[in-house]
Amino acid sequence: MSDFKERIAGDLLAVRSRSLAYTEAEDDLLVRQHSPLMSPLVWDLAHVGNYEELWVLREAGGLTPLRPEIDDIYDAFKTPRKDRPSLPILGPAEARRYIEGVRGRVLDVLDAVDFDDPAPLRRDGFVFGLVIQHEHQHDETMLATLQLSKEPGLVRDGRLPPARPGGPAEVHVPAGPFLMGTDTQPWAYDNERPAHRVDLPAYWIDRLPVGNGAYAAFIEDGGYHDPRWWTGEGWEWRQRQGVFAPLFWTKDGGDWHRTRFGRTEPVPMDEPVQHVSWYEADAYARWAGKRLPTEAEWEKACGWDAGAGRARKYPWGDHEPTPELANLGHRAARPAPLGAYPAGAGPYGAEQMIGDVWEWTGTWFDGYPGFRSFPYREYSEVFFDRDYRVLRGGSWAADPAAIRTTFRNWDYPIRRQIFTGFRCARDAERA
Image (tube, rainbow, N blue to C red):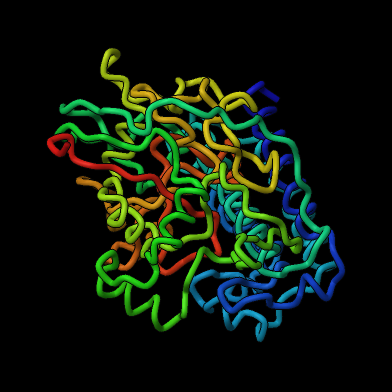
């Protein structure tokens, strides 16, 4: 097996280890629905195996289906999450046996496949990148489900670098064109393609994500009770839902606390705020006299190297993330303190753009000029309907295999259970 195939085999092993670790719990917890927003954990576990079977074994390998009778059960578009507990889903033991059987055959296909094959699924190992990234995305979804379960002791924590006080509040990005998206990353999704020229005026963008301390100041100033800062839809949502702080925050006396994976603790004021909706992020930005960056502004600040005339894969360059550069891959079950990664700064000086929290942008999710759906419309194209806002950068729960400067995420503007935060921007012409 070639070195590249050995690396893919290692990535497959690593992501499966994550999936099994997050489902190492009592069967009752795995089959229970902890929120109508999420599937039972055991559904996610079997779904990643069914996805592998469909794309690697059947589509790329041409093999006979193993369990065609469960395809509809694990088709994410057939049944909404809230209704999945009513499906005849595989139990925990059967789900583990099923995904193990699929994985053994996947490794056989990997050993035999020709990465120089012109077929798009097989060329450069795309289909393996597809399933590796897909499973990592479901692992992050599992972590969000475990957070909603409020069960303590299920998710490991870890150590992170300390905060680094000081430094400019904003960085300046000069006017000029850049290439947005990619034509060169072999495992990039269809919505990241094609690369295209975007010309932006100059702007300022926050050096760091908005922190809990700054967000608490917005709350204390009455930000949740002043409709001036909210869009009409956002204000209606806030009133209807009775939202008064980020999800999982409560006030005890004069101090804010949060519940994190079943344990209550003081809110650390030097961490990026997370579990806020787009509406909340947008309201804060207005209160601060700024706005959310557009998706193009975010990507240019993150990785455009004007001197070299090209985009970097990551803010710091093209080499893979390390613990000194970004908080990715569940090194700890929380964002790192603000300023913890100066070595991971982008070309204009913005920090922590990769990892820690997904960052809301002001852009609706849509295809780039020249977009072509591949390998199926349901990954991206069916969401191009101005219902979803773009998120960028990845969170502490995202794996490096599924994150890069061009990677695009999206969700409804009301979503808060995901590990979301934001940073602000403003036009350069303003004082």
